[in-house]
Structures are given as structure tokens and as C-alpha cells.
Amino acid sequence: MLTYLALPHIPHPPLAYVTQAMVHQEEYLPGAFEGGGSVENGTADLNYTNRSVNYKGKTYKSRRQRRFPLADEFTQWCKENIDLECFNGSICTNEGNEPFHGPHIDPYRNYGLLYVVDTGGPTVTTSWWQKKDSPIMYSLEDHPPLLYYDYTDLELLNSVSMKVGMWYVINVRVLHSVENLKSRRITIQCSLNDVSRLESAVLLKNNT
Image (cartoon, rainbow, N blue to C red; front, side, top):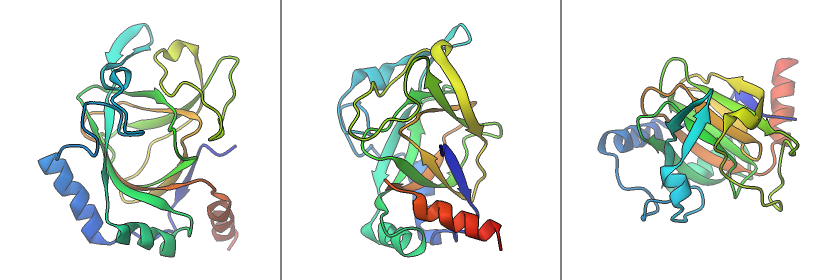
């Protein structure tokens, strides 16, 4: 089962979109959704805004993600250069000074296709987990809890330290989190529900 896939063969996006992401970092515009809630599903969910996580016996506040829509031209660029089924082009950054963006599941897509503008620190990792006695991956028809609060009940499946200036596709219907954040993490993203074509392209590249 795929947790993530590095995509070094995909070209860098046009510089204008990377610059736009950095402008959002500097100016930190209000998020796409007001009310202090989740930007993943547009709801004013205070559990998302104010949640804490238990990690190795200590309690930490969790960061939350802010999502800013990009112009349709970016999504079209992704369709032409990565996969025809890309949708929802956006800039993603996170809010807070804590070292964690706690374990969660995305509600509306199977995979996130992201280009790393800023990792958020030199030792940042993205991790995937399985809760004890629970499925590893949920379909979009399933309705599991989207937020998890205690690392104690989770088994680590995989982790990766992403590199600036590279594309990755990540499985967001597996419980995932980000650790060791030191600064604001910035990515530009599209969404996908099927990655079979990308997997085939990577396999072909590796065999040529």
C-alpha cells in the first residue's frame, strides 16, 4: 500500500506560483475559511483549531493548516504536466509554533500531490500511522474520525523527510501527521483520487 511517492521526474512548477506561495508566507493573508475552523473541510471545528496531542507522555498543541486557492491555470498546469485528474490547486501553510501537526485524515480526497516550497525545518518528517484494531486506509465512502489525539495508540507505518523543490504524492486517507516543525511549512498542492498512472510513470523511469 502506497504511503508516499517521490516524483523527481516531474518539472518544477512555474516560478510565479512558488513566488505567490512565498508572498502568502510573508503577508499571511486570512485563510480561505473564516471562523477559526478546519480549512480541510471548511467547517468551524474547534476541535481542529484548538486540539492538543499526547506524544510520549507529553501534551503539545497541534498546528492547523491554512489553504489558499490558486488560479485555475495552476490546476491546468498540473493536469498537463502531472496527471489529467488533478483538482483543487492551492497553497498550503500551517499556523502555530508547535512542533506537531497532529494525526489526521483528509476528508475529500485520496491523495495529495504537493511541491515543497519550505519544509518547516531541517528535521521535519511526515509520518503515516495505523490505529490499533483499525483499518490502515479508509475509502472516501468511509467516515472515520478525522482527528486523532494520542500517539500512544498508533503504530508507525512509514515516514519521510521531504526535500525542498521536489514533488511528492502522499496518501491522505491513511492517518498521517507532521513532526519536528520549527517554522512555517509551505507547499503548493493539487488533489488526486487515483495514482496508478503516476506509479506506472515512476516504475518506467526507474527501469530506463
